[in-house]
Image (cartoon, rainbow, N blue to C red; front, side, top):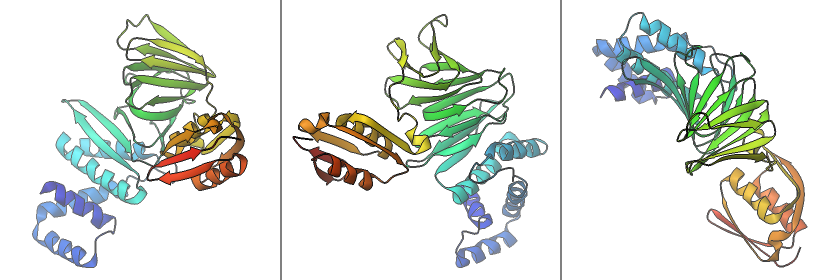
Length: 323
């Protein structure tokens, strides 16, 4: 019942209730003093949590304001409830992702951001560093993001740009891998398969396998890709994928690339399956795209490579015997 009240409050403050529902809600306000108190408190905190810009939404300052205000006059349970109303409102306005304020044990509190399929967002940590979070990914960090507790947890994929506080380390836990990072830019990917990949664009990071002694350190340098596997294996090599950041930049680059590799990149970027039959899988293709639609890229493939393209559901089949 209480969850329902908070959902109604979120819709009411966000002007998303139908006229009939709005009138009924206002009637209930006149009869329910507790509901009135919940509305007033939620509206106060929402109106005073405006430290963000669109599209680079800095939701963390708003949550810190919620925490600081409520800690003066409420219990942890109330803090969670009002943070939840703010999360509902933010989803209603921005869409595509959900922010939760979660409580673990008696003391630890975290902000958790989950990004829906087909969406991506950029966030700013309380220390000023920026993170881009890919679709179907979740990032969690301590609400008290002090110099003593600078550790974030990642499920999925994210790009980190650590240019603020260059002398202070940030720890990133993803699956079985732990990364120590500072003054660097890098991409971490963990899709639930039995490995975590990290590609460093600037600087270097140190990687550890949670199943090994911490003396087993892997230093991943600029331009390299590190792989941490669940079977205790760790290794690095020069990054050979020009499209590892396509999800973030919208840029797809193919330079004399075999068609089978092109379709791998398209599958990753657009979230569709490809099957390639015949000798065309070895045909070379060159082009660069910026935020291009899949249909337009497929038209280019038809023009440049003699291929028949069949589309069935979420699968695209390419067939051909000559380039």
